[in-house]
Length: 184
Ligand code: XMP
Ligand code: MG
Image (cartoon, rainbow, N blue to C red):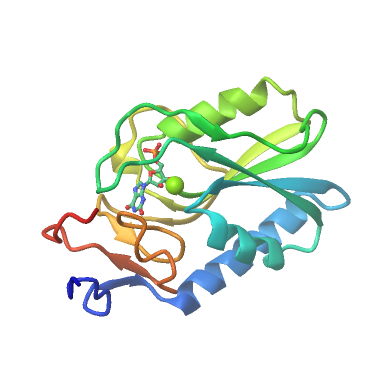
C-alpha cells in the first residue's frame, strides 16, 4: 500500500473558517438577489457536492437541488478539453431561476458548455456560483456571478476537489504539490 496519500503536509490555501465565512457572505448576496423567489441549485458532480451542501444551508430563499455530471477532468491535473454530459437534470428547468454551482471555474469549458445547454431549456434566469476562480487559465469567455475566491494557477484539492478521486473529504482547500506522484 502506498504511503504517499498524506495531505497533512500540503500547504493550506483556505482554512475551513475562511471558506465558511465566504460562503455565508455569498448566501446573503443570493438571499438579497432572489428575495421572494425560489431557486434551483444545480450542482456539478462531484467536485461541487460539498460546496452546494454548505451554500444551500447559507441561503434562506426557497430552493431545490438538482445535479449534473460532465466528462471528467481526467485522473491527474490535466484537462482533456472535451466536455460531455454524463448525467442530465432530473427535473425540467423551464421558467425556473437556476444557479449552477461549481467547484472551480478554470478554462471555462465546462461552465460554457453547461450555460449554453441549460440556456436551451429557457430558464427564467441563469447564474453561476463558483467557489474558486482561476482567471489566468481561461480559454473561453465566461465569468461567475458569485465567486468565493480568485486563485492563481495552481492545482488544489479538498472541500470536494480531488486528485485522481482522492482528497475530496479534506475539509480545507490545499495546494497540490506539483511533483506529487501520479495516482491510478
Ligand atoms: P474548466 O476548465 O472546464 O474546469 O473550467 C472546471 C473543472 O476542472 C476541474 N479543476 C480542478 N479540480 N483541482 C481540482 O480538483 C483543481 O485545481 C482544478 N482546476 C480545475 C474541476 O473539476 C472543475 O469542475
Ligand atoms: Mg469538477
